[in-house]
Image: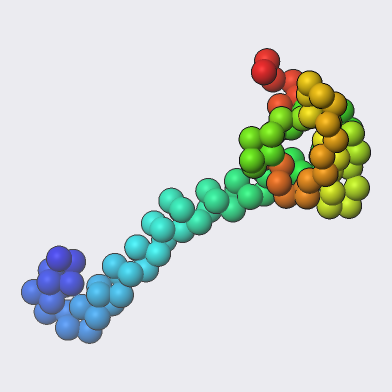
Length: 103
């Protein structure tokens, strides 16, 4: 519509720029609605993983809840209640920290 308006005003060369405006605006909208929020979420998750410590209560991506017994480079050992089972997980399998919540 903008291209037709510019063309009707006699701006043939400006009409080409009007046609380029739509894809640029679409990419800008896509960036601010999808890409940027995902980058912020990934950054917060990476910070959460870096701050994990012994004694934190966590939930894995599979829904297993446990308490951290030890943290190594990329491995976490969880103690699972009520049996006191010890399971080893990759750090990236931790979905959230529930320490401090009323869970």
